[in-house]
Image (tube, rainbow, N blue to C red; front, side):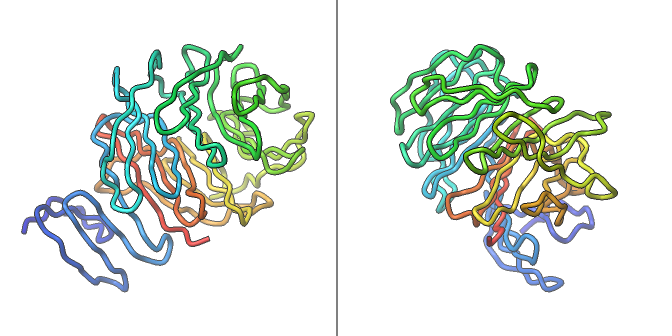
Amino acid sequence: MSNLCSSGNPSLCYFTHCFFSVEMCALSFVYDCDILVDTGTQPTQRLIVPVGKSITCAAVSAEELYVVVDQPKDQLCVYDTTDLKLKRSVSVPSLTSSAQNDLALCTRVNCLYLSDHIDKCVHRLQLPSKMSKWRVKEHPYGVSVSQNNVLVTCRLVKKILEYTEVGDFVRELSLDVASPWHCVQLSADRFLVVHGYHGDASRGLVVVDACGKVQRRSSDGGYARLNVPRHCAVADSGCVYVVDVSSQRVISASPNLQYVRDVSLGCDDLAWLPTRVSLDPTCKHLYVVDSSTQQGRVIVYDIGN
């Protein structure tokens, strides 16, 4: 039994060829050679899925985790959410790899939507393997699924483009914010948008109406200040989870956009660059894409909403 890291941080260590439990400082740790579980108070559990390739984005259902990796074929890796083992890989024809691509899942129609930033399109995957795509007139950044439709955030032109589940254009919303990266629909006429860039005084979270006008902003003082908010997910409870790329952290915020806590910060003994977040349908597990290295990984938190 050999310890492969000794940073002094007791919360994260790797061991090989072993399976055991350790209790330390009121925390319980369970190790396997592929998965690290950290059971504590916030979060109560942490799993690491070592994908082993550079990751761009991910989405999750109750049964499967979908991860898009940077390679010419078999770009979509599908993992079982029970044991986090790779089940299969799927090729997405004509997909152009980009760190700006995004992925969303519609459980109602069992479809994945993958935005292709460079080729200006959205790939639609009717699970398990039926492919189609539609063109987008602007470069897409974020993609999300509302109750009935697909929302594509176009940062350069500050717009949200709405499409039906099969790619028919519905409408566009011009946003009164700088550099929108990603949005989530909260109700028929309210949208949560993460926006801004380092140096932009207004950067953060906003709720906009159906005309794109800002109705509410996140707090901007002290530790709650977001540096480069990039991606978000919203639980059924209204709790908001946000990736703050520049600060290398994921935070939670209340439904009125007030800072609650850090879900995760960078670790001394592990490289860490969170770029995407996704909630499972139960809203009890938060999946975070770590794009810090060419050996990417997805980190799973038990948030217990």
